[in-house]
Image (cartoon, rainbow, N blue to C red; front, side, top):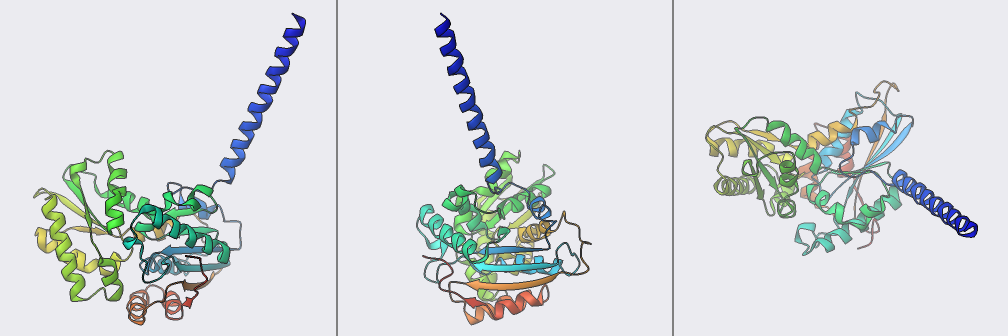
Length: 347
């Protein structure tokens, strides 16, 4: 009997040692894991507050997210939590023949975006990565990069959801989510809003195929206006809002904000009443410095770079740079003098 009791004591000790080791391993894994899309961007930047310099990388599958980069750069004119900031806009588009919305499967999109993110980390080692693209934010959770937790990454979808939810405070309010086919087909915004107790019949999701490309070429063109009218009518026909409804139109593609006046005018005309148009790009850029100490330094030196594996068209550069100029001249100039780097990532 004494031998049996001794054996059981030994087994129990080994069991608890093993359990403790597993628990410690789990703690280490949690400590090393990068933030998810639901973590606070504001808190993540504030956590870097003891640093003198940081690197922020903004990415998109085109040039729409440059509006986020420009807004972030402009904030450092008045807020100085760091002595130096390196702000990089990295285009995640592999090349002009392989756009993410034209890729045929989620797996293909995830592989391409993983390659892009791996290249960005290798080249720039950013402290924070902002996915200023709804399409790529939807794709990101399926990437191998996300499973590694290799870097703090924040996507724009949650900012759009938060912005829309803030407008749906009455029973008479409804929202129309305008996005690319990838964003619309994912139902990411609608699903998150429904989880926050928003009735499904108060949410309309509208896919706007190729609209982002036309906006990038010229946000003020007749083609853009016509396409917005076409997609707006489709959205209103598929789920007409009540006559007394307060309608919020969410521009859930980073390019759409460049054509915000056209969205405002079209929906106002079609509904015969004022509408609220929100751009999640604004919420994302505002969150970057929401919790920092703006008085740490007298000023902040900001170096802005634009890099792309895909060649950018001269007309696209001229069009977007003109839109950025009033917000951040340094970002507009960085676009005009962008770096074409075919080795930015492997595809």
